[in-house]
Length: 591
Image (cartoon, rainbow, N blue to C red; front, side):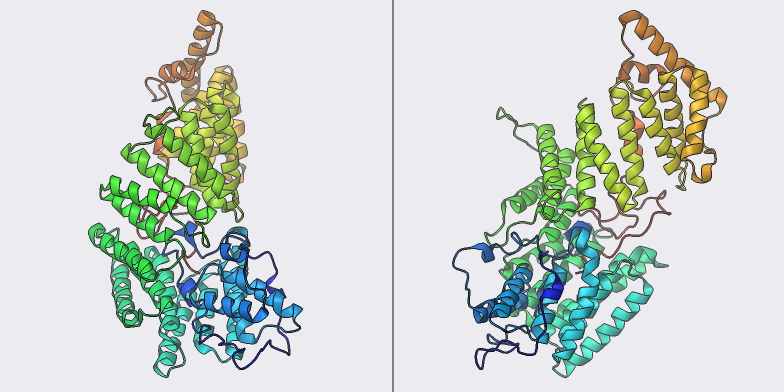
């Protein structure tokens, strides 16, 4: 996102004009469809891939190159051209043009100001995301003032789907905007790209609400038919680069909502989406489409092709539009998942191939890039959780604990209960590995209390018993009973005891067994019991040592609560019967 305030794109009484061409549509009409291509955007349904841009430096690498024009007129022309093509560097280009104009004693016209606000809003990522909606609404008003009614509708549609919640009311307003766009197109006041973009944005909003419909499958069928009509409408106008962007995103969205029901058909749509993107010679990466395609390839067993696709995506990137840090983090996460599932090759420091080492390296890279110029809290938290788990599985408990603690902070800020439960269970595992059973008991108790709010009760009960087991390792059975009750009251909702807590008899039995193991081991070797010994004696389920196996059965925190939603890896589907009380996800790929 630009470092400058959007208010600095000033409106003035003397728009810059160096002659007959210095109007809003200077440059042979490059201003038409300004930002439309970017509005259709990348991000066809992938939550971590919404919008465009990285920051003042990376968003528009060309702007930093020596030889960029200093003339305000040329800078203005360039900003209009980039907006017209939906280039992710448009926001930075408008910033430079506005500065140059101000120095020359001029300012932006209403239409140019609107395009600048659109481009700035499209760059709103991470913590700046909430600013996008108001910027789009302001841009819509300015487009109306400039007589650009098609652009105004696009900005209003973007503002609606960029809001914190998109429900039935917002979808009804988007439907109204679609009707107005179609009517304006019929009388020549909205071009094909603008009209198609409004319809695409409504399609995205509907896709993210499919699982809330009375009959999701029927609603998905209706949306597929609508997207097919949209593609048929836009295809004859594919000579316009902005239309090619809409076509690519429409095909990707069609692939997304087809994947749960017909993966083979989804592959066709997603391959076509990438082909449309390449046909338009668009200089920015199609990361969301690549993530979706790789996920469907994984699901259909084509792991080698999925690996090759993701490796190529990580290696790609034009000099003036480098791969965004957040997109690189997502690609690293997806490739790690693919290698992990498939056991594909990974090169070690000695030159041998080791998939486990490659997974750790990819996850470490994902963490590093998630903390880039425009930090993504969710992607960063997922990356830290995955890397923390990988290190804990390798016995590197100290490093893992630090990563998991930071992941917990991120998931807490997001309100992701499933993530918090899994993170705390792994923190408990690390505490046991570090010889800190009291700390493990606390994490297990907090996880159990959180899981107690789910409809599925098994996880809460297992975590409750793990709490008793850890307390037993920390002291006597009687202390285990007392401390369990205190922790349950502190962690449970409303200060009440968790109804899933083990009884005193159950707690004492598990505690006595664990304590006997610890005492025996201490007498024999003058050291605390290892996790392997304790787990085996206490019936922890790990058998030959290693992590408690129940931790792998906890719900994945990075999966969506619906059949047609997309997770951080680009995977569609994966409804959780125990996540019915989880908050809904906001519209994905909305701007």
